[in-house]
Length: 345
Figure 1 (spheres, one colour):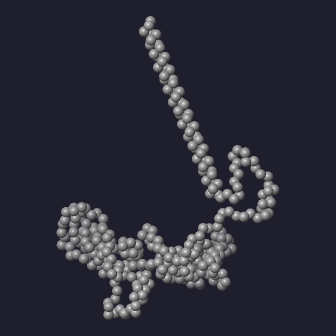
Figure 2 (tube, rainbow, N blue to C red):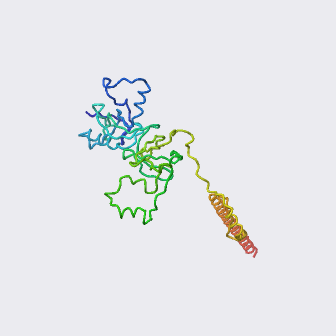
Figure 3 (cartoon, rainbow, N blue to C red):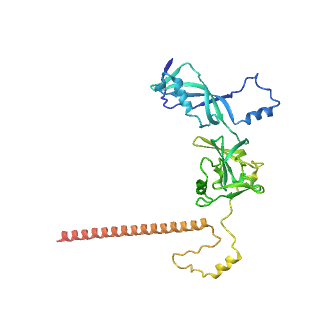
């Protein structure tokens, strides 16, 4: 049954999702919790859970004969997307149910507006949760992991214990003996080991045992310290520190570009003849001057030169205008004198 109402047009579906309590087992099947702490811990330690949600949709008219198919296609478009209302990534949906027996056509819009309910399976990790991922890429700045072969996790350098782990650079890409080309010639693709993702540009190894981070299988346990949502995709920020939320692990600025010259370097510099700073086109930059500071000075110089040229152009324009005005005034005086002379004659 379809009823008609007069109101504004609705061209796009309203994605106002209402989340109900998570779907759990019946009370008979549930075991009584020992205390509130255990009960809360169970709910917070799981990254996958099912919630009951309701959603208002505008079904296109092509699905008027079978609205369920249209709703299922619209729900399929939400899979593997982070939905803020659900606070997680939708993995699947089930138990679709129309909450009303009739749909509404608003004004002259042919879309069928109806409320539906469904069970959504979510991947919803939270800060403080411990998970296990597989090392995918290693670099001096971070370690990249894959969780469930799908989700990306990044562990920055300051969240890797530097007193236990150090980074070792791998062979260069153009190295004919140890580079990737050498492995391709000697080892076929079917016989290559599985966990070679993180060894291309280097790897993190233990100081004492020289064991690779993640072990032989590449699996590494980490603590979630942050969530990042971009383009409806959820990625995690992890840490393998013992106390990941300690202020000691805050990002620290890198080493300064300044360096202390040795005694031999100072002697060599003193022996070299110094260029005359008065020569045109040469600038003397002090050894302890930062590169960005030098670039800033050059930028200021270019800006001052541009301003000077603009002032000169404006002054020339004003002079030309004044000359035209005087020339015009003189011509007017000449014409007036000529006119008076003709009247006298």
